Image (cartoon, rainbow, N blue to C red; front, side, top):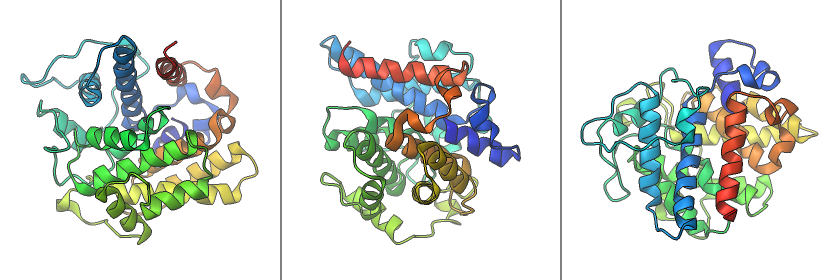
Length: 322
């Protein structure tokens, strides 16, 4: 959330320092909102499992995104189910965002549930699926192969291109490496850039090679890039580089966060969204350092930070069954 708010204010021309100093008053983009809805979907699936009932995790994610779509003021198509509301839907702090990811909205408005075998938006290469995929890497006690499957299936709900789905899988793998497996940042980044995960599918290897080669995917336009030219691969690489450069300049977790957000928001890559890159860089640094990287206000303030804290506690409770 800190990275998202930093990126939003930077693009708007405001002082991004307020994103860290005044967390309760800062608006966030669809990156934070869809991440929260991903968490809520995982919580719902875990709640069913804790009650001894099998649930389709990807269907839970799809229904969560449909609920998010309704929060943006969109009317669900007649062929779409009407998901019952949950606690997250009643949080007034999550106001409709300006210009939500067009590829995500377009897919959800079809009323169809994309699947890995029959994904929607086959040419969509933008960062819409990438920016909401970190939570899959935060679920403990499941194998890396399941994290990958959940991520790729959820990405296919809205983004059908090979690149967009594979890059989403790489993000959740980095988050898992840092938060669950306790690897160093260098180890996690190297693994992402080479695509050498033990359970990686061919898609993950290809995305890793594209990142390692520094492939310039800007200007693809009609090939499925986002309206601003951003791609999932370019945005992810900007976030990874920002996390690494931030570590080189920092002497504390808080310094690392600030430096990483600054680098991500000002990366200047035509194929990267500064808002999403900052959001991802914040998530990567957070997975590495935990709450030590956050200002005290993020641990106590009302507003969106309180919603984020509540969802984090709920996910923790659901994973432990208590």
